[in-house]
Amino acid sequence: MESLRFKTNINCGNCIKAVTPALNQQVGANNWQVDTANADKILTVTAPQATASQVVKAVESAGFEIQPLAR
Image (cartoon, rainbow, N blue to C red):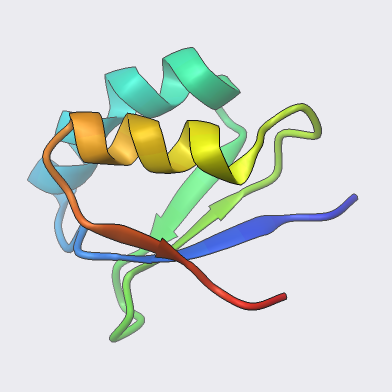
């Protein structure tokens, strides 16, 4: 399965809590994770039906910055 990867500024547990409702609605619970230990705060989405534009819209609506990473 292909994953979508994004650089974000989601950098802590409270940030993850803030973005969780929007991401769960767009791509489903358990279909995404944020690596806050990585300097680029990498968001990985594994939902097969998810599109990059859906993910960007969800994260931006929660007030965070996001940009797709090259595959």
